[in-house]
Image (cartoon, rainbow, N blue to C red):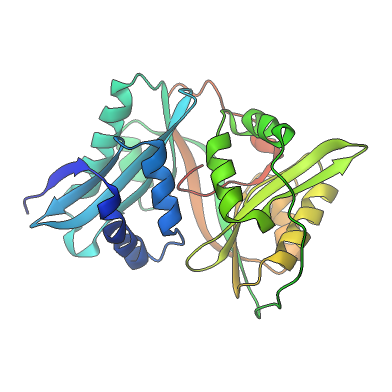
Length: 279
């Protein structure tokens, strides 16, 4: 099969949505727009006979490391090397800008492919989901995104992603949460309304009590029949709290990186990541 790779544009978003719907992923049009806004020359599609059959997107965080996400291939065209070519294209693009490290979250099926391209494992992530009856709408006062939250997130994540977090907060202000102790920030979280479920992440806390309070408040504000959390498997509190609240294991992911991992952040403070597409 002949195909060509090219830069993705806003006109390709419907095609990207088609691919992610086939895959059963939770992302929205807004997530595609965030990638294209952050990296207008660093998102790519594979096209055959005028139809988009694959995608890969990148986003650079402060030049410290970049993320590769939304690697999708139409099942009808798998086995043709399209996914690998898209990955190589993304890697070449980031190498061209001298990005010292690239990260992604790999499924068990994708992990061997990434390993062949030089990615190594960092830690494990598990998606947990909560099926439930829809809850009635509640009146809430949304928390504001503060500079203290963004500064702490830079430390925890390993790089500044304030533009991305502010964009998510603007779209879903009710899901911005924080906990304080004696006026000091002890935890924060964000959330999104995906196509399939409401999604909590990032979920960051210095201790278990703050983590539990934020999850419980998120569950009050999230009204969907399903809630997703991409939890850190080695978190000292995340798996325990999710089980207590009735969440069920869904799938595993492996955080991987290629190049130098000079800015690993503080994963021990994370209960859940923002999402596999963004880190």
